[in-house]
Length: 113
Length: 112
Image (tube, rainbow over the protein chains, first blue to last red):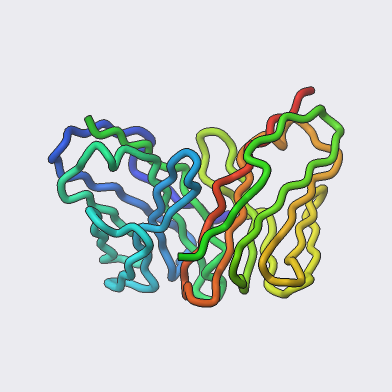
């Protein structure tokens, strides 16, 4: 079974702090994704990566950056956390040839106070 | 940008009933997928559809890729309590390479 793990299930940070969310997958998937999930809005894509050191902006990249130094690991960085970034963050991965069949991690619920 | 409208927003049904939900768009989509999210977990892929008119089953679940390519349907037959969760449709539009667009979700509750 594919396993996608996220470093924290719950996180509370203060406004202005730099926040790192880590995601690791164990199935040698080429593609990795970061989404945020808000009630009534579904999932919205923040950034994705096709390969190591490659990244592409999703639909809502403002205020976020990403890093992919190793194939199995994809990090989401909030440079200066703000209260409107309070949300559920979901990481996903997929095989190169089946990019849309994504496997999700359990999510990190981030609260920025 | 492209959007998906998913309905109904929520459903509260009796165990054993059949369930139908759908997803529509004003523009053409090339791929449709259905995911289920249980409380405290990430979404899990249920069914992927790649061809207009395609009808695919996964146990008690059946999904169809609409012939107009602007909609998709998910049916659940003989619902059971473990069907509880949020069901999301997701699609790939003609101009969104590599990106999935998600619907707002349908929350399903099943009364034993």
